[in-house]
Length: 105
Image 1 (cartoon, rainbow, N blue to C red):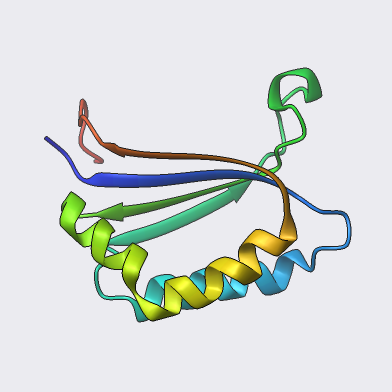
Image 2: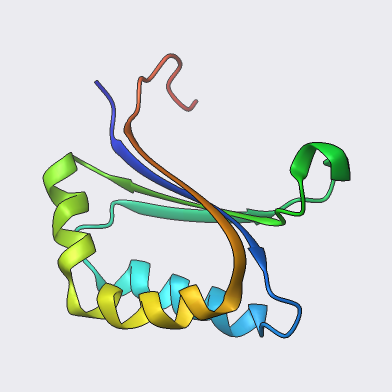
């Protein structure tokens, strides 16, 4: 079994200051020790009919589910969640144990 993943896919509100949200997410990942890794990206290739307005994806990895649970309850996460939530129009969240098929080279 691989890491535990927290995948968030969002469509931001038109008035959202996305750069500030990204800085906040990066700061959050660096401050909370339970986060093993954090990466994000903005869609540049997807057809609108397929992406349904979603523009950004965020992925956090944790060594185990218990680390993810600790992250959810961390005061920095709780505080930032309200800022993040107020900036998004639509969201999809998936939390899952990853199945590693091929390791990074």
